[in-house]
Image 1 (cartoon, rainbow, N blue to C red):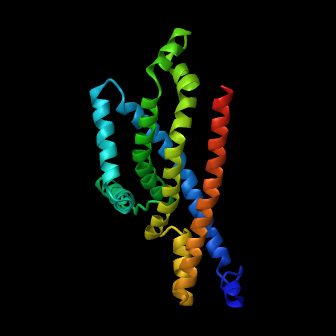
Image 2: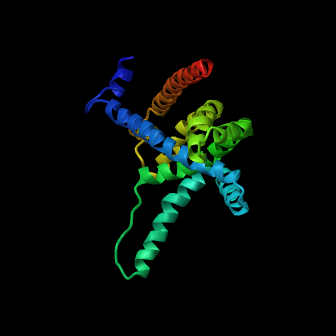
Image 3: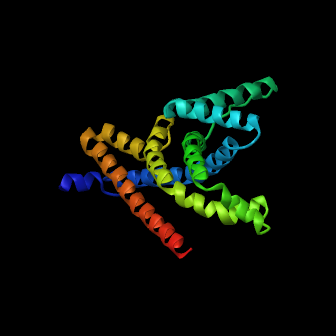
Length: 237
């Protein structure tokens, strides 16, 4: 017990501060990715049910690509591919410079597009569950399309999509571990470094497991409260 407390201690004697900073990076990355993925997913869902065939085709191609590729491969394509592409562009312009992509931004974008491809299907199912008469009722009282969407459709859409989006959030939280491959100091990378230095692999990887479980439990509690709030608001209406 004493040795465990020493290994997880803060300061020069333990790895507690490094692991705590890794937890902060993991949570920050997940929270930064969430709105990006939700926003892109919402507009992709709108495009999937648009009357314009080219929009539907582009949205379907988008979701097919990013749901079909492994998340790790998408991360590599964003981190290394964009970096190489920018390097070649700068070289073609006759500029001698080294381009480096921020690993946090690369991870956020890569996880965001993957999240959005799945979120778009959740939003699309929620859109289809809302009767078309809801739109007609909004137009009948003089609301424009944007007002109908904001005042009538979106409150119902959020309530219907919330269970599916909750599952995607938990998946996103776990997928943040992939960014350790590109050098971002998240929970998995910090515990991995500690495991290699101290030769206590089981202890530190077990600590990482517990930390991810704690984050998942806290997320589940927050999600349950949001769902209860949405059901109460529905009863009031």
